[in-house]
Length: 187
Image (cartoon, rainbow, N blue to C red; front, side):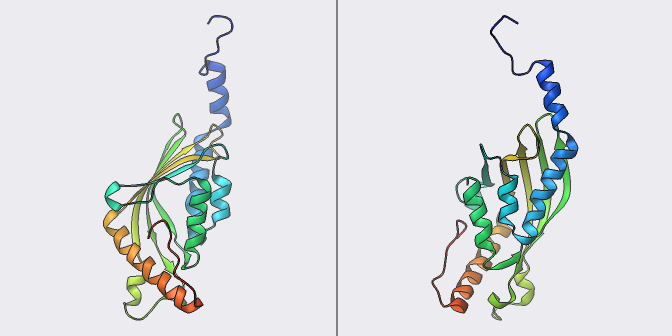
């Protein structure tokens, strides 16, 4: 290598990056991310986001998702869900860790735990328990402890049903609290 030029992938630098980040670290970060859905912990989501860059994108396009969200907007989306849900637990079915790419891919399922007081009797209780399916692709920073990008692939048919439940729950929440119906990025 000529003097004055620096190759970002010299063996020493690559070895240091691999030393600082391991498959175990990536797995732990992914597990913490998934666990935050159970209680809709927006602070945990914020703590896992890279402070220099974070993007959350939903797909497929056929689900008519909102545009990509930065970290603050995604955390606000999670906080907004707490108004109608006590949790939205996500369960990892399979996890694939790509250490070289600093990436974790998860196949997951979920269920919704709407607050009892916002449910109405016009639909069966069992319909309030939505079950979803997802593929998450999490890209991490060099440490493996911060997430830089999430691509969340949704069950588009199921998402339509969930949107209807959320809309109904928001209307019930507004009646209960005697306020206007709030809309989220998903409505």
